[in-house]
Length: 585
Image (cartoon, rainbow, N blue to C red; front, top):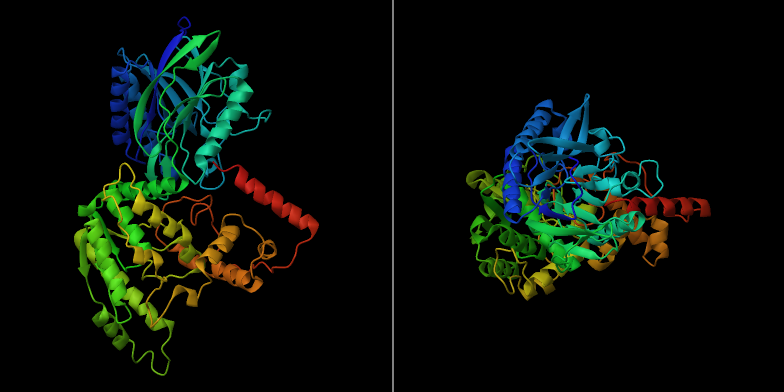
């Protein structure tokens, strides 16, 4: 499309929530967004990476029938652009010459006007695109209504200037005037700042303005926060869309002196870090339940902080009518726990039932009497309580088509302080990537703040007593978590160094932590791998979560000896740690 150069261009940014595999639903969503953009006078609408397929499609994208369905949807949308409405930039899988590409296509004039393929395929952290897509050739710009648009796809903007496959540099040298970057960039804490810094670097190196288009929504463990934005050539922010909210915004660009500039658009306030974590957990749970078509959820409400926060998140995500809570008391359940659980349910306005498990546990013990003859009582009998509760929750799930929300935090998941087929039973865990100290912090936050799109009540929903009492599994008399674990403020700081930073134990001890405690926690972390492999998926909010990011072998004879390293080994370890944290986006 080589019309005369334009000096005005209205570009709609579609920050939307596609569903992986729902090709017809994603197509309909794109149609509605295009109609809105047309009403707003847009010349062009830009969607996020792989929008038609949903992101990330993982190995689903290798199915030829899926590839063909995506292409048919794109071609159907292309035919609709024969009208006077805006052109469309949209992401899709695309097979060309026998190779499968992560493509970004321009639809205009009733057909597919241009194709560009992602060059740099991420293969770290939660990403493994190299195993499903072929790398595309270095692209030139796309001409649309006389404007030369560069469309580097997501990771294509993350290479350093001068690298062999620097897509942004290639686009600049071949005449691009404006960069539109489609993304499937999942949330983790501080992510917005990282994206902005990378984009500022691209603008500084090219002298070109840049539009960053990101999707929102939950997809299994990943949550996409949107937070799309644009930078003018002078690196000033042209607009900033809100995080975790679907938005179609038409922006107005003017060319003066050969440089494009956006008329000032809305600039949303960035979320506080804890607010963003809460919003991510809430959205991740909502989309997991809704996209998998569950009627609602059921939660074992113990009166403790973890189940209290999960029940609150579930009510905020789904509304009180879709949340059912069960208190499952045994002889060691305190009256304090019974009172606190009832108070939480009342505050949230959810259905609440008390189902004693005494007969179930006694029945299990009776069945095992002959098998256990001569063996003393130990943790086995304690775990029967958790497994009875897990079985009852799963029965309610089956009977009423409700998904069980499991409630273990990252501290517990790290060291195996949970019972397989007991309190680990469930379909999804919104707090799986939150350490215990973070659970307390978010609970305190929720008592004084409510997300704008939350469906639960405002005000104090988690009683103060739940926030102040000593945490306990209540599987025996006078039990507390600290009987087995160090204080959570100590445990969590050690775990963060072991899990997120992959620090050697020697450096953790050198930082002031007790050596015996560090070595114990490291051993527990490794031994619990087999439990984590069987745990429900949960929302990723940290740099390195269990499952998508951190994949350790179950059979593993290696343990850090905790001895000081040589200078060369220490330098190599430091460099590897820096590299691991620097490239993730």
